[in-house]
Length: 551
Image 1: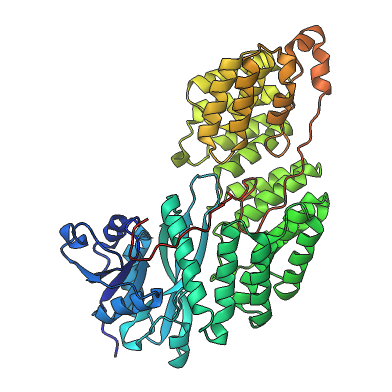
Image 2: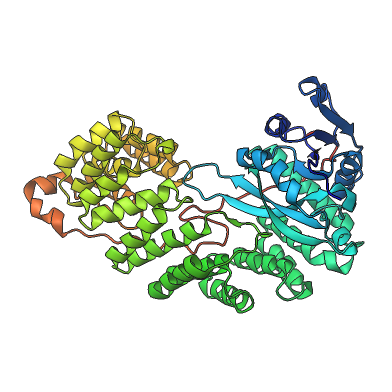
């Protein structure tokens, strides 16, 4: 019989000293009855008990198995329920409040999936998440299996346990430390080499998918395609492993071979016709091929009827993402009113990002809806840090720039810039204006702030370097028109590039004759948000460090 006040033990696996254990322990305060830290490395300083005397620290000599480390900690747990947490993961505030209440009504014969949400590096980027089996009743005797990509599924199947999704979330910050990322990848690769020859048949597709992910990380797409293809051949039809293999094959296709990409997506959709990630991938490839109406339809289907497998990494805001892509595609088709309608709906949803808002406001200005854009800007979430008054000045300046009234736009844009505006609605046209009038230093200042505000736009580094090179030879404004045109091509198709200022002075009517349409963006991969490309990770195959050593 289940107790009315069940206790919770949290087992924290700390396999690398670079993992942020302190943040994890703080998030567990008052949420758990017992916290056990299992560390597999040599510790040069005191254990976590120095700051957290209530924490039980257990040294576990590394045995070339993550499952063995988890199981060692679970054996020491004394609570009625066990929550498994990786060092660096943080229990969300809502989950801290909900954990005790949830286990009171949870079924001991069920293993529970917990959301693992990766915090993006920038608010413009889309958060990713997946659900992993992390919460179990101690009396169930669940044990993990596998040196790497460990899972409790075999143990649960033996005891005929069910699986369900718990309303709990762990936040996992993106690992930006290159040493930790490299250590983790090399360690996983070594464990895969050890486990693949000894693994049972049901484990092999999961391991092959992990191998493919590591090969993609090491910039080896050909080898990754082979691994994903083998995983697909061995995985049961309709399984999570098979869906992961499909997504991996799509991501491993060369960017320039759009027909191969589309063929891979369509094969996946034949098996998983309502998967939202696959529908978005199909829309991205069709958009890159110029088949815009079909692309918009795919994005619309993903937003309205798409589903996700919670055990596969996916965008947490996949619906808002699909609507953003749909709106951009409709704008390329010239269906501006419909594009604005879709983006307004997307920006009213909880998963909207600042990038979606900038797209919506820009399209409103393109369609002459300045007053509506000003009104909408007032409801932009304040935690993004954009002052409403400053944003109004930027919108007015951008509106004038759209209409090629550059001299009037300058006053509004410079006012917003001096007030600290970081919106591309201000920075893009102001940089174009300065480049076009030979104000090189001012242009560099604006580009530097833009790069700081949107650090994922790596092409701005090259643009700033080119401006500096040109400045050394005292160029005329017309000499930098190619850079001005490049700046004009940012966004879904907005501010036209201004002609050289001399031409504006001699023939102002020319300004109204210039139109620009944005270049078709690259096909979007299943896990990526527009228009940010995946960051390459060309790691060398050097000596593998042991899990119990430091890099």
